[in-house]
Picture 1 (cartoon, helix red, strand yellow):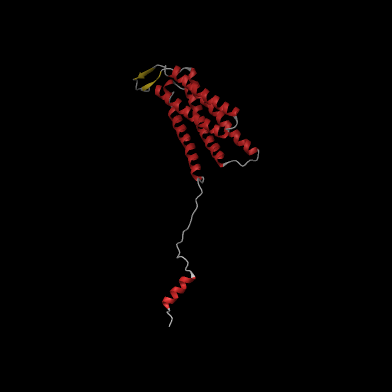
Picture 2: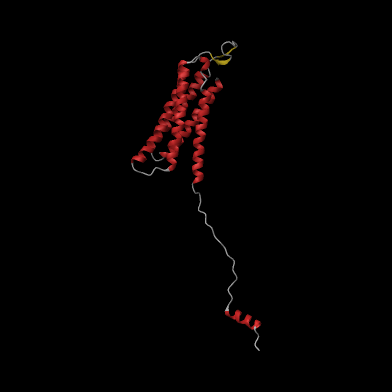
Length: 213
């Protein structure tokens, strides 16, 4: 459970960092929006680190040998504050996703041609957010209402879904970049021809071929 908490927090922090970079790419000249994104990103990171160190790592873990119940190692109890492990990323990623959608809506409202890259980012962010949001809410309910033995039941699907969705976002960006022309290619055809023959040379050749009688 201890290492599971560390891995989960690390995965969430990395994915929030990717979303923050996307917001920065869309709002480079808008410092207030960037400040909001950075504030929520660093706030969420600090909260997850604090919860992992103070609460989760300090929770006692006992081995259960009663095979009639459920053998293995798990926390005997889970503090209520640990719900912040799931509430925090829900809030942070909701804000970051909302900033991306707002940017797309503003461009559409102003009758600007929306760049294909922005459409790709919004689509992938929506897919990632839908998957991650559903798994975060499911983990929250399991921690709140499930038995302690099942607290980590949906943690692995959460990490797996986040890694797959995050990798998909980066691979799609790479694919879009590969489709864009990176340089102008120019083709030159070279033809080798005989040098032109001057009139004096023609006359000399004719004298050799047809000598005067």
